[in-house]
Image (cartoon, rainbow, N blue to C red; front, side, top):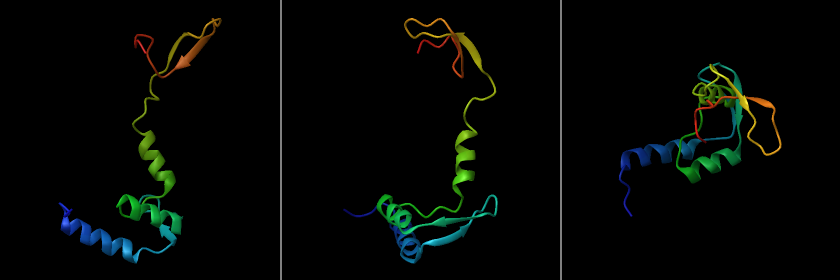
Length: 95
């Protein structure tokens, strides 16, 4: 099967071919983090370029989309419980 993106594939093969395990500087916070041989094997398997951002900065990006601005208080719906719980979900949501 021929690739639909031959230029991308060629560039990715070049990047992954020269990727080596070792320390990398994060582009966001400038801290050093390590890329291991297992990581490079996974990048080759998934056909993605190596990370340039440290795990902490990537987690901050993921968590930036969560709702921590509003919290709701409603009764616990577990059988036999009457406690109030704090939730990120509005009590109006049916699930």
